[in-house]
Image: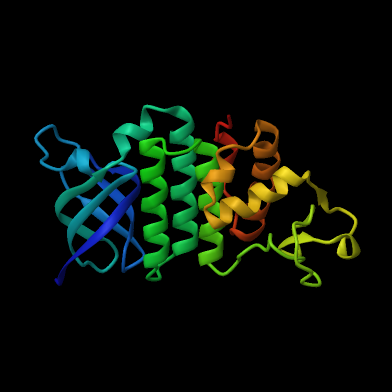
Length: 241
């Protein structure tokens, strides 16, 4: 069997038999990988603690027909411990890894991998409010997947400017002339916040009001659920501040 090494983020694990686990991970160059980690639930396991959700690892695997087999694991970044100690960060991270799993599939996606690592790092370090980090991640991940929302010009006629009506089907904000029934009317601060989250303008995002963040989060959640197949179950558990 061929042996290979990869960088990966641990997405989730579940038990197999009495001592093993099946580990799902997003790798840098191979997309999603599912592998068996034998004996990791025993107290004598050398790398069981390294194969927990939100950990970033360098991993060696034997390639198998259905499931690969974990051979060696080295920790690159132990974000899991910091994230699980903060409930808002934990729920945000859970939504992020679910998103990464659904968007990446089996295709190579270095951009999605690096985006997820960056998001988990920001949550672990508490660089910004966890809900802002999550919403920024969702918008960027969807953009990488080919569903970039338009917040800088009208999604209908391309008229430049900060518009205040969001139309889900159009993929962004629209001007007054392109507005349709069912569009979501936002205040100016919320509309600007959406653009800031997509662009990574944290100087603006960090100084927005709770009300603007709530409005923006609603738009991001609706846009994510619209594009991601079968939606994101974990979003309903995200704790917003």
